Image 1 (cartoon, rainbow, N blue to C red):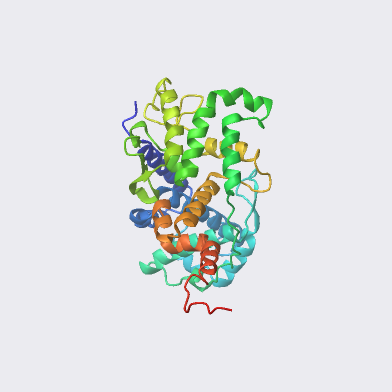
Image 2 (cartoon, rainbow, N blue to C red; image 1 turned 90 degrees about the horizontal axis):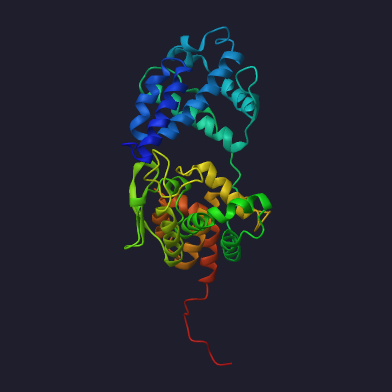
Length: 355
């Protein structure tokens, strides 16, 4: 049995992955990752490492100063050779490029993908510029791509009911899917009801341990992004579904190393993020083919319903675990406008005169 919690194991795994990625980057890059460690998550640092790989691969193949050089031999001073015009060409390159390696797949980036990679580069350059290890900061001179706001996809109230009905009955599933449905429907209903009834992230859901579910107080203990631990409370519908699964879970002998996990796969191991994503996709396609429903869309659905019921954007931000209420307000701006419109005749200034 592992002595580490799920979240500790995940962090250890991410740290190993990061070290592996750093090995393929210039040696001086490790200074950057040590510097940002206290203020970033391991997943964020892994994303930076991937983005920097793309950037340095581009420089070695397209920039005259870097051509013919070895990745590991590059020095921090080489960053000063990159000009703003070079980065504009790099942004154009990011729209479509061939990954490094002979059999590497082709990559396509929309505005958001380009934005993320350029944001990573800005953070990277800013670090060395502030430390006075380089003299120029070319990314600071580049305007990031303008993002087109994406419509928030969420389930309507009737679609939520249909989705949960489908999880229970499985009547629209294929014959192959039905073979497994009888074995997993209690677990699936508990999982879907919990996400739709609390708005927790998929990583928070699969990270639940047996001791994290408190039926006496109707709450779950979860680990938020950034390591914060909080209690989130669930309603009667979620409690009923969770209790049914908890009874079933007690009869399962988990695989070694997964004894503490609350949600188990058919292999008796802790569910993975990918498994839950596939599960949500399977059931949601039986309800709507027009909306691409993911676990995050279930979270948006809960946030929408909570805001419509309470009108309290600060409560929604707190329950969803947003560190900045402006993030929440941005996602639910349309609903706020809807509420403002409904308030236009709420305050009566004078009594209506008789006709």
